[in-house]
Image (cartoon, rainbow, N blue to C red; front, side):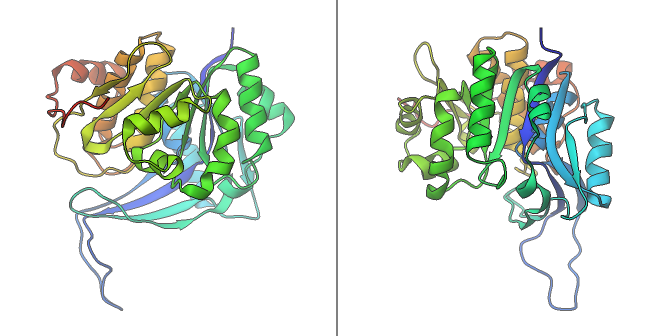
Length: 321
């Protein structure tokens, strides 16, 4: 029996966020805003953090610099109980970092330093430890220069050979990302991109068509987040379905996709049907959207589970088929 509920592997970044900001300050001047914060972020980092907040026993495999930014990330992840044995430190490259001005509608822009995410590459012994978990989540393909390609494919192949559930997400995908993603698809049980990222790779904007495109290339369960329109799921078994998001006042959408993935992982760890996993994931993402940064207002599993049944839902804008 594996030691951990999950291993999160890949993209970890420190986000420095401010709300609300529509324009850069004038040269030499300042713009006063309501709030600035720092959070653990990234397609592996934020997902791991949220899974731990929701009560799972997990570890993260990623790389940070030997700098104050890396110290913050390590301390905050340790605070929620994540195992950091696989957290590499690089003395030659700074920790991956983003500055994110958040607009009044919750949409973000980014200034980004790739930093240590581009140099992350687990050793053979570290891969063995990564696989000591029931669920293996790979996040950040396209930003993991050293790990993209054959090393990522080999990790997922070994995970499937051991009977692990594999979960996959990426960030800032475009048509060029397809070559890196295609070899991974036959080894992915749960593919959880945003519709924008998935559409850029599939060359189609219709969620049903996009989901079919990925399933035809090996993905077992295609789960497409649709921002305010909820989620579209084309499962390995049964008919596709479309679930609405919660009716909330959005503060910041940063980390919503990563938190949605965390919700799916939590549901899988608890043995729930995929529809319940997706409902819970919507609620996790809603908690994150209520605050600034990748953890937002996310607190604990029981509160989130209760909100899944009590918070109002948006009306679906037409059923997707």
